[in-house]
Amino acid sequence: MSDLFIIDAHLDLSMNALEWNRDLREPIEEINRREAGMTDKPDRAHATVSFGELRKGRIGLVVATQIARYVSPDNPLPGWHSPEQAWAQTQGQLAWYKAMENDGQMVMIKDRDALDAHLRLWMNDEPRDKKPVGYVLSIEGADSFVTLDYLEQAYQYGLRAVGPAHYGPGRYANGTDSAGRLKPMGQALLKKMDELGMILDVTHLNDDAFHHALELYKGPVWASHNNCRVFVNHNRQFGDEMIRALMERNAVIGLALDAWMMTPGWIRGVSTPKSMNCSLEIMADNIDHICQLAGNAHHAAIGSDLDGAFGTEQCPYDLTTIADIQKVFGILKGRGYSDTDTEAIAHGNWIRFMRWALP
Image (cartoon, rainbow, N blue to C red; front, side, top):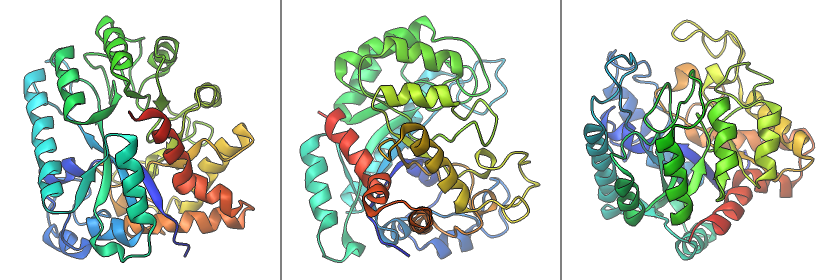
């Protein structure tokens, strides 16, 4: 197994800590042992992410999320019944990140200077078992911004990237499995994000909102965790024309490891990674497709979404913990990718983007 420094652009760490009640400082085996027999979540006892496994896999920098959806009375999705409740949930998540900083587990990356200092720490030869995991703070779905004043408050405490939508209809934008361009509130959101110099995450925007956002937004754009529609024909993935549009904006796309996004015909709770032949080769297929469209390796990267309400029951069968992402680079080298290419995909593309986009 290679041992490249990896940046993972999408991990729901605080959601796992607060809603799944996982102490990510514990060994992954202990997290799963404590969940044996539990059935309240679909991925109980199948966790892949802990601080120890991040360090083992040399995943020293992540984009970590806040997430809390508002649901109107006619929305069947799980979520909070008021934007204020959703905001309070995100603030609890922020408090967890701060507690992990105080414990030496994490460090927030808010600007280029902090990024470069953190990279120097992780690129040296000192043992990684004591190094804090760096995180750029992102929010998945903007519903919890009661007004745009809340966005400004979030920027002040360190939020640097915003995905306006998640699943279904949102207050600012419509996401996966919904339709329609950005709402007026969403257009105002993008204008304020532009003023603040934030990163727009187009992940989860439906096709209409995706193209509308690219028309309006002038600042940096990334896709933290998306796969290619050519392999799984669903609106959660990007079609080739969408991928090309992102390349024109110098965007980077993080490839995800949720099996339903990797293998057509996946049935949640029925399919298994082995029965569907879902392996890390498919992640390599998605990376390669983006690289072939671009004619280079400058736009593909990692955005695993591991333990984003799924675990080993719904991810590649050759991945036991997040540390196994290292295997994909050996697969790519076997397909003819150079060391320079694999380093770009592992971390170089995200570093280049962050140095450009962060203040």
